[in-house]
Length: 151
Ligand code: 4NP
Image (cartoon, rainbow, N blue to C red; front, side, top):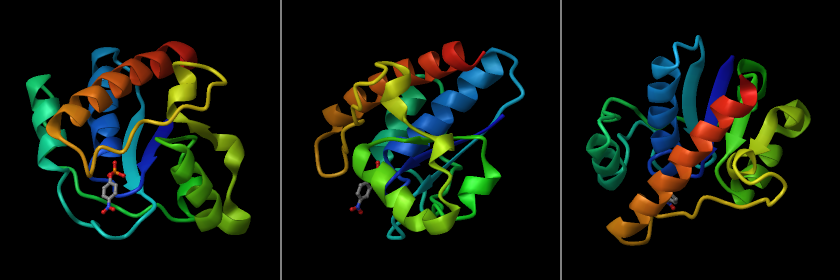
């Protein structure tokens, strides 16, 4: 199983999802590859936002080595399951993929936790540190749901 977590910048939400999911996959002894990417190019090569790093570290998860990468049309072929953190991300993935956009592989991340509700993980980038705590909590629950649903 190869999983890709996707947000806009790949510095706030999807790096948390990558780190948390990798941690859980290891705990459960699963043979899954987990990576992340962003639909925008602004932050390529950067480490995760300092508040994303901090909230993960507070839960014993070090994401400081992760670097932002761009979501590309090839991503559709390279992963089995692709999770969009938000509705705008989902739409942009369709656009980037063009004729390669295999949307049968794509799900809104929070639909694993709250099926059919089409909820988005809020974008914490322009907000306060407290927003990252809320985002972490949602992502943590979503990752638990993914493991439960896929296994
Ligand atoms: P992310 O958050 O998509 O969760 O990584 C954002 C990071 C950067 C920007 C927007 C959202 N930006 O506009 O630069």
